[in-house]
Length: 146
Ligand SMILES: N[C@@H](CCC(=O)N[C@@H](CS)C(=O)NCC(=O)O)C(=O)O
Image 1 (cartoon, rainbow, N blue to C red):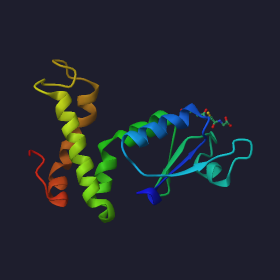
Image 2 (cartoon, rainbow, N blue to C red):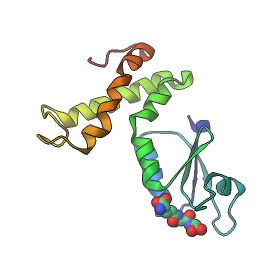
Image 3 (cartoon, rainbow, N blue to C red):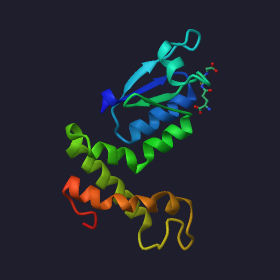
Image 4 (cartoon, rainbow, N blue to C red):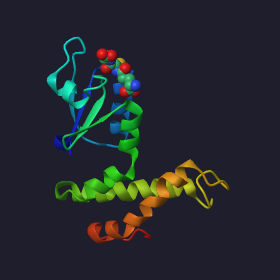
C-alpha cells in the first residue's frame, strides 16, 4: 500500500498532522515526503497547483488536497474496499473491512440509526455502501452477515 499512498507534508504543519493521525489510526502504510514550503517541490506544485499547500495525499498518482477532505477520504470504507481489490494486501484488507464494519455495528448496537432514534448524517453517509456488500462477499469470500 505504501507505494500507492504518498503524503506531502511538513512536520510542523497541524494540517498535515491531522492526516498523519488518521493514517496511523487506520494502520495505513504510506510514504512520507516532507516538503520545504520556502522552496516548493515540483511534485507539490503539480499535485496542488491552485493552493500549493500541504498536506496532499497522493493515492495511485491522484492528489487529494485539504486536510479534512483527506481525512474523510481515508475514513471512507472505500479505502478498505479499494484495498480488497489489491491482491498484494488482500488478506489484510479483508480484515480491515470486516473490522470497520464490526466497529460500526458496535456503535449502532440495537439503535435503529447511528444517532439513536434520529436518522442523520452518518446514516446517510454509510447506507449507500450496502450496494457493495455482494461484491465484498464474492471477492473477499466472506459473509457480511457473519
Ligand atoms: N485548509 C488547508 C490548510 C493547509 C495549510 O495552510 N498548509 C500550510 C502549512 S501549515 C501550507 O502549506 N502553507 C504554504 C503556503 O501557504 O504557501 C488544509 O486544511 O489542508
